Length: 76
Image 1 (cartoon, rainbow, N blue to C red):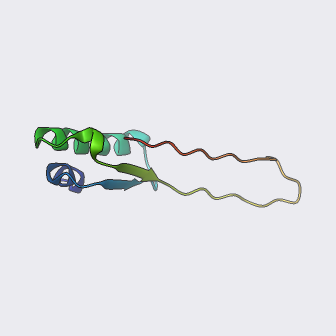
Image 2 (image 1 turned 90 degrees about the vertical axis):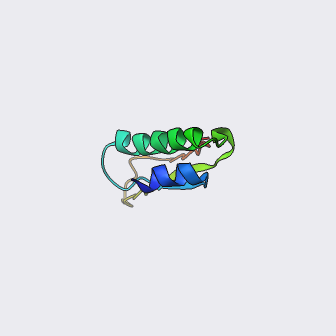
């Protein structure tokens, strides 16, 4: 049993770090979490789910990108 499924069964919030690999791998974990939570009788609309990753920016003498805008979306 994965920790995402166990967390869903318990109805506790989760945070999924996206470090490397296919995006669908992470999406499947969140979907498994939500399915397990729903099957256990929890209200999946009220259990926080967070995701995050890393962004590395190389500083250059001549900038190729003038502005970087990062937006966050709540994934509940």
